[in-house]
Length: 235
Ligand code: PXP
Image (cartoon, rainbow, N blue to C red; front, side, top):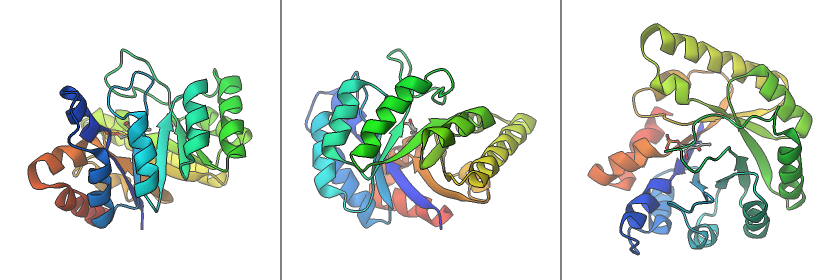
């Protein structure tokens, strides 16, 4: 069975819209876990637009199975990750102007910075995953750098329609295969929903999906427990 990491960033987005104290991502995490989530994923962005440092500290107390912290390879956030010690850290690229993470981390271009961040995380006993485009060159470097896993980004697949979607799905299959052959654990995420996840779960070797926006969107209408249970049933 594929692990479901529920990304609860957008619970915090609703809270931050009013700079209020609710809804609390920690409460959402508890409900998600009670409903079968295999882990909780959050992205502590440099601009703190949704998840705050306080949330990550609280989540560390609440999430007893798998806390996956997405972060940019930035000194202060890497230091915080090493202190809080999630089970997993996923390195992602970050640009302030973007609406959401727009593509994979370019580990070919940023190899040195990524290697330095990875060393600190690994020394702190944290598993490292790298969020990458479905590109063999990127996956090869991830292996060289000593990553345990790669999270292959599914954004382009999720946005594509018709024959382009088939093409993007094939790229994901090939990338998953390439990563597995190199002994990397294969995760996927970004833009996945209750509809487009069907083809993703059929890709051999995918071990973990990190899904946020679609689950939180459904949770607003039907409740977190049902939203998580319904996604879990598809995996
Ligand atoms: N995986 C990574 C690395 C991400 O950056 C995000 C978005 O924060 C997700 C998964 C979840 O994406 P979505 O909210 O579109 O499901």
